[in-house]
Image (cartoon, rainbow over all chains, first blue to last red; front, side):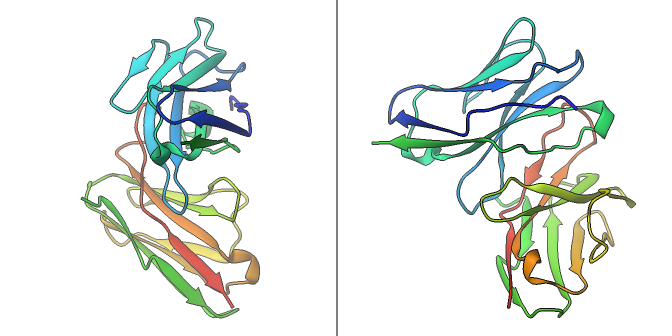
Amino acid sequence: DAKTTQPPSMDCAEGRAANLPCNHSTISGNEYVYWYRQIHSQGPQYIIHGLKNNETNEMASLIITEDRKSSTLILPHATLRDTAVYYCIVRSRSNDYKLSFGAGTTVTVRA
Amino acid sequence: DAMVIQNPRYQVTQFGKPVTLSCSQTLNHNVMYWYQQKSSQAPKLLFHYYDKDFNNEADTPDNFQSRRPNTSFCFLDIRSPGLGDAAMYLCATSGQQLENEKLFFGSGTQLSVL
């Protein structure tokens, strides 16, 4: 499985963009990068996913480097409600595309 | 509108007393998953069903069992809960088992073992 590496924590100012990095240097060509987040005491919530191209939806943008070895999740205007643990996950055919969570990044948005 | 529903939200059981957690879905998804999440840890996959095909993770203890009587419902049975089984249990669903399929999670059941 392609492993991911994320910083354990980061702070962000309310109203500013939050840029969350993720390294996945062993990713292979057909593996997708997924981002989920988990607000305290809730189930994980899907944010976005991508293969090669940058992606944007109503929640966030996903920037994947050309070599696909790293990606950045961008929350364009962070709010206090974005405080959560953010998980970067690579889904692999080798493990039947299971969603396996790593440690994630604890993001704290401060007023 | 809740699409993956877990009941109850909080469950208290006694050491060694069997307990069942339930999950239902309105998405008509083929795949249902059970995760265990202990305090301050990431969710850990216990097992999943693809339709009626049960798939156990290699390191899931025998104490944990699951049933899926139909597409909509899935149950997690803990035969003899120990103190170490206190955790949040999360149910999730997906349409298929493919790399570009999203998982939808319920709100979880917080299990306490006394």
